[in-house]
Amino acid sequence: MTDSSEVALPQLKTVRSSSLTIQRGVCYAIYAFDIATSIDLDAAQRLIEPTERQTIRQKRRAPEYFEYRPAPLRVTWPAPVVTAAGFTSAPMVDLVMYDFGAVSLSFSFPLAGPFSQLLGLSAALRGNGDLLAQARALVEQLITRLGPVAERARIASAIEDYVIFQIDEWDPALDATALTERLAPAMAQVLRAEMRTLSQQESEHATSLCGSFGLNDLTTIDTDAALIFDPDAADVRAVIEFANAQLLEMRVLDNQLDDMLERSYEVLARQQRGTIRFRSPEPWVVAQFQLEAAILFERVTNALKLIGEQYLTRIYGLVSRRFHLSEWDASISRKLQTVESIYEKLSARAATRRMELLEWIIIILIAVSILLPFFPGVGHS
Image (cartoon, rainbow, N blue to C red; front, side, top):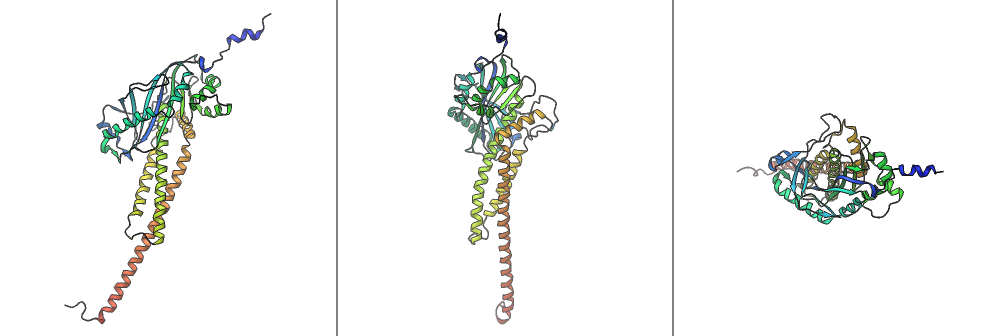
C-alpha cells in the first residue's frame, strides 16, 4: 500500500529563492541630490532637449488633481556602463528634476536569471562608490547646463540612495500571497543587502510593509530598497522615487534649520547683552531664511497630490512610514516655529530700541528748545 503523503508530495509547489527565475526585470539604483533652492522647470524644459514631464500613470481612473504640482522634468542622458556583481548597467540614465531643487538620477540594470542572484547585486550596490561618483559627475554636468535656471546652484553634502528591484515576469508565476509566504526570508536578505541568514523577526520587519493592487502583483518597501513584482510598475516606482527625493530635501532643510537656530540663538544672546548694532542686518537674515525655509517646506510637502487614487496613496503611505517622513515633518515644523519665535523676539527688541532712541531724540529736542532763549546769539546771523 502506498502512503498518501508520498503521492501528494510531488504536487506541492515548494519554491525557494534559488528555484524562482526572473524572466524579465530591471534594477534601478537611484541617487537623489539637492542642487538648488529651486529649479524653473519651464525654463529648463526649453533649455534642455529632449525632455518630458513626468506624470503618474494610474492603474485605474483617477481625478485630474492626482498629479505632481508642478510636474517633474525627466531627461535621459548617455552614461558610462558600470558592472556590479555580474550585472551591467544600461548605457543611459534618467534624471528627474523637481521644482524644489532636487534631482533624482537612476541607473538601470537589466535582470534575468535566478532570484538568488539579486542578493549579490543588492550587496554590490549598497554604498557603491563608482556609481556615486558617476552620478555626481552627471549631476554636475546638469547644473552647468541649467545655469541660472537653478537658483543658488550647488550640490549639498547629503545624498539619498535607494534601490528598486522591479520584476516584470517570473517563473513559476506565483501570486502575491505565495510570494510573501515562500520568499519572505530571501526577500528580506535582498532588501537588507545582508549575506547572512536573517532571523525570523528581522525578516518579518524587512517585509512587513507591502501592498498589492491585484492578485498577481506585490510591492515590498524597506528602508534602503524595494522589491516590486509587477509588469506595470512605472507609477509605483515614480512614487517611491519622489518620496526618496522628498526625504533628501527634508534632511537638507532640517540641517539648515539646525544651523540657523544656532546662529539665531547667538544673535539673540548678543542682543540681550546689548552688543548688537542698532542697524544690524542679522535679524532680517533670520526673517529671510525663515521665509525661504517655509516656502521650500511647502513645496516639498505639497508637490504630489495623492487624492482619489487609493492604491498609490497606500504605497506612498508605506514609503512614508518606512522613511519616517511624518517625524521629519514634525521636526521641521517645530524648528520653523522656533525660528519664528526668535525672530519675533529680535523684532520686538529692535522695535523697543527704536522707540527708546526716538524718546531720547524728543527729550533732546525739548531740552534744546528750552535752552535756546538763554542764548540769544545762537541761531541769529
